[in-house]
Length: 505
Image 1 (cartoon, rainbow, N blue to C red):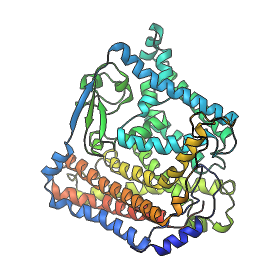
Image 2 (spheres, rainbow, N blue to C red; image 1 turned 90 degrees about the vertical axis):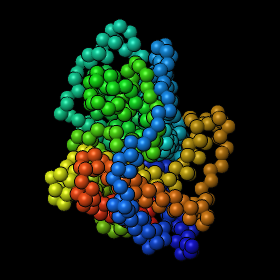
Image 3 (cartoon, rainbow, N blue to C red; image 1 turned 90 degrees about the horizontal axis):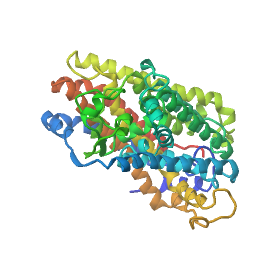
Image 4 (cartoon, helix red, strand yellow; image 1 turned 180 degrees about the vertical axis):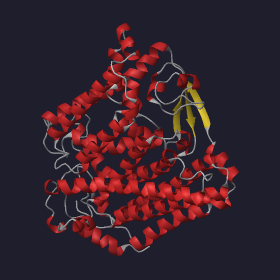
């Protein structure tokens, strides 16, 4: 395994430092993959996984899709149930208010103030990792549900909960959540100073107020299901987890949202907040995607936006992109000068991905015919893109997370910059040297490549299993999946190229 040339380039580039942006350490360390080996190997692995499908009987795939086991049923007493449903969220609210205070009154250094480090590292990156492992945690620890349930716990409050002042319009779908997520992506990727502590404190406080008002106006369930961006995002991430919390079908039949079906619902915010037992199930990672109902157009757009935003984050830092927009990477002008062109770039990547997905569906319909299943349900097959979006999110942010989580631990001991050492981490020495150590760099590369390739392979099998549910014809199913497979192979190449190409810090 010869990686001498990439490591020599890395050693030269890693000696520079980057300006703090949305990610506190940015991409000051550029991880260059042995491109010819990894990109080709990754693409071949994804393509081969599709070619192996005909060798496996369809009945075995169907049994795989039904694989799972119930770990147990949780049904705490009524008094304890209320505490469990309220306290984690109230503690989260207390933490958010403390971080807002730290952002407003603490150090102006993004690497010393806990607010940007907790928002961009612990929450945006770390909590995503936890959702992949343990399922939908955000529905329990978001900082607004506890306040809403506490205020509406009395007789008049329960009446308010049963009949909110406004009905969330059905035609709105998840478009409000999508617009909020787009605003978040723009702030993270394009705004000149997303890690400025005082500015970020105002943004977090504003978002907190918006969601509290949204819940009191439209009700907790409808707002979390369709209006709050990260309830939608983290719920999407949790579909990849081997764990899931389900409620009995009887609860779903009374749900005012979208759960009225014969199957037990999966992580619905309103059903989970209702009284009654909750079952904890375990299955293989990503198989919970088979239990998700077909998404509407707004849900399809949200999944595509999640993938487009993290893709543009990688693309916008590359020398290729800077050359395309006429910027010398050695004379990088900063974010302010690139607001307009990067805004157009973010929207352009989103539009290009949406057009590519539409073309895939159209081609699949033509190839598979009316009974082929593939391409017949856009909201069902977009779920196969979820593993790709999550996989690239994990791989893309991995080097940043490994360094910035150390800064977050250190900053927690002195949130206001007064010289405190509350948790004994104030003198923590942040170790970033492993990003210039050939041994660790190589294994980080390998981890990133494995994550991306495994995510694409999982996407292919999820697409196949969902297609089998719509069409019993194995031949039509395979033919109809060819366009989606080509898209996935192409995105594998694109994702690995983003990790391998030179980029600014």
